[in-house]
Image (tube, rainbow, N blue to C red; front, side, top):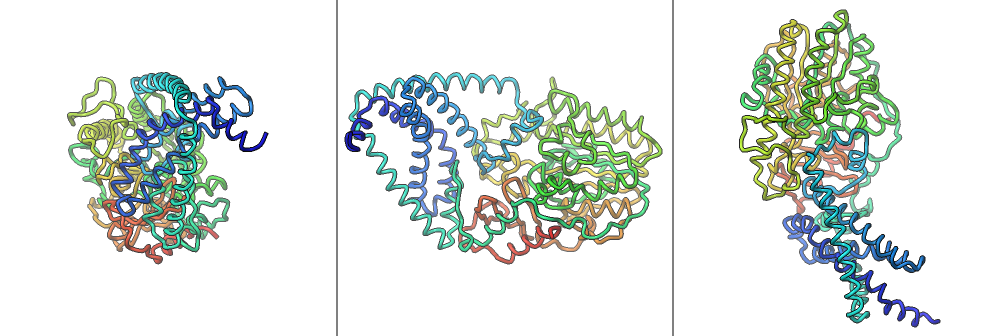
Length: 610
């Protein structure tokens, strides 16, 4: 049998045609789901290269549509000669693929990154149910959708079998050479963009799932730096010098709210905290060093960029601050609402007290937060009075945003749970933002009880109290369709409250630019009279140092960035893409990347590596 005869038989095989028709009919679903990618693409970078964007979309999503046929149906049918098995495996895998694509499309529309190893670690890691909290109704809706989709896919395959019997074979197979020509054209255009250093062409492919980009270092040297940074196993020099301290005579309480916006620390949303802030020093222009919990908490306790997280995790490097607490025999207690094991803060920041990283009892965040406050009040009554204490209270209700039973907050109209499935660039944020403010109000009532207990026990006379957030929370503030956090480095996602109460220090309000990097040096000075310069163990300075900050180094799960004094944002992703935007996230493709900014970023990131 010659090749021509074999190819003819393959093309005329109705079962092969049925597999192809099934994938083509499924392309309707793929295109519907992919409208989220298309909308973001054609409302932004596609306006610079519309023809290339259309060609890239068609070639990429045609490939996605044909994957089930090429990787599942054809191997099973050709090798095992089992059409029924190939059919059902294709149906099940298509259902799973469509679900993954749907989730990826929503994730990308809210955060501008695709499903990746970091997201999967959150979903399948320890206590993942506390990272993503949904109502029972939402789980039921997802289950019904799965059953409906399975039924639709079965009907679709039967329809594909009818199409295979009615239509001429050759007409289908002409699609493949046409797709090859289109793919070759797209790659040629992309290569031209690479060597002309056109970031707008390269930004197009970031909108597509399952793309593994390639960026030659000679075209974009900054990408070489990012590849170096995401490498692990480097040797460190932390701290740079021996830390010289003196005996402490004060306690420390840090109260953290997961996802706390700077503009909700006021007399309306948080009246108890606001009243307490009148006795403290308030830093109104304070920024987290990340839009994620992992790096946000890391920067609070280390005073370093979260770029160091993986290396410090592997090499079991504890923060200087935590080491000093134990050296001076502090009673160190953690009160986390959600688990501190996902992300693995128990192996970095809190490795010396990893047994205290489990969540507080309770089904939902609001229940855990309520119990947390109660547990801490009991601790204050029963603690060892002969030791100074350090306590970290980490509340979670602003992250989960599920209202307590029978609770009606003062901000109305309001959702009672976070309806992520409704979010988009045209969604009115009022009801969602009111839910968030109601949860701030709820947490403020719990914290009010803690502050009353501290005052009644006279502990405010010798306890430094810090209020802040690990990161902020966006409600499409920039009108680019971003919601939540992890998506960008604008004020909406990284600007947080910073209240610093130090007994005996005159209350004040500062407007200069401060950051989480500055907290550790300030605490090391005020608690232990540390003689070292902050640069020996931190990337920051003192909170009350009013010297102008030229830039802020930030990072997230998928890259690192730099914010300059005008709030312009340079964002370098580990995947290789480079973005330059203004404070409102409007991307500038015409301006070249300032190599001096990249150099500054690189130098600071290397501070504590040998």
